[in-house]
Length: 447
Ligand code: HAM
Image (tube, rainbow, N blue to C red):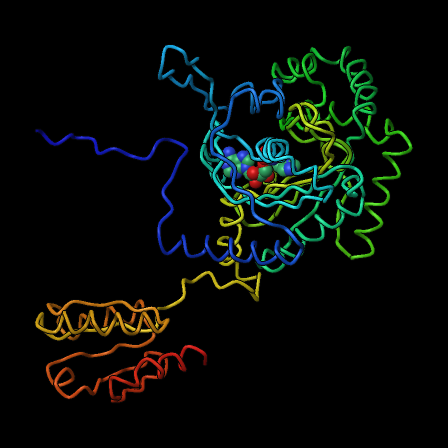
């Protein structure tokens, strides 16, 4: 077989995440899990692919996601009696969570469901920094029957306050929260009519994309990023003027609760978001500085929904949720760590060092080195084993990079059971009987 001249690469828009960067991903995820559990959330894991109609119905046929970004295929029938099924890699996770809520009758508990998820999503977007075709989201949904309090503005404010706390605990600096209300389905009908009317005379001056949106889904014109159209879009009617009293009240209570928690926000009347299921509160968090994402790429987005469960054949279950773009969050943390103005950090971006590196002197000591490593690892220590073929200098260099201590295992050490250890932090070198090394290193770990 001849060697192929072009080695295979990861598919465009996908990427490998490698150590040590994955250690940062894990730390971000464990902080998120810890915060979510303090707020009473439990984890949900839904399948990565679902029936295509879930997203067509749940996310909306007219959205960019469903109309052009989904990875969809006909799943082959395995038997004559079986019909081929159209399947889709999930482009987002809210529809899947609501499907699971219905399927498992979670509404029957009468309890408010607080569910979080961490996992990959797939959209066929144009790849760029912070925009991938496989990307990760850390998200959550709070939903339930209305008797569980799922409609309450308190839930919206609680979710937003939790996100502010999470970003603070992660050490994200200078985040901004933009907030809006897109009203009830009824409010939006009236607003859509007003938008269509206002767009009719100016439509021909807009870019082709916005001309199409003005016809199919006028709300989408509002979140258009087309620079040439911005001045005209700013003249369009504002949704705030079309909210009924109940929606206005709801929004006022969300804002009041945020004020009482001192969570800062700005109201952006053009924030309508790109998915069809939103009602009332919508929001995005952005980080304007330094992440290289550009101001148009939100770190996270979300909002309230009502009618989604019914659209998928379930009982009424209003809710609110969000999804953080984990790739963008990591890029932001890395970019902010490099910016000297932004200090101090709460999250150490460097991977933690191992407790010890065992350096066997000569390959005859490899087996003893592995046995010692086994003992230390079983005691809860993180350990790397070198190789007996390495010279002492090479072992020291390797150890210094990854570990806090080096343990030298030469012929004498194996015979006498007395080990030579050096701490890289203090420069101390000491001898210790092998029975005591585990507890000594465990103590050092706690210091
Ligand atoms: P979304 O705004 O489509 O909302 O996505 C949420 C976040 O995912 C975005 O703010 C962004 O950070 C990240 N994201 C989206 N597309 C990409 C991409 N191609 N590459 C990298 N990151 C990306 C939703 O998905 C809703 N399900 C959120 C939600 C939950 N609303 C209610 N509940």
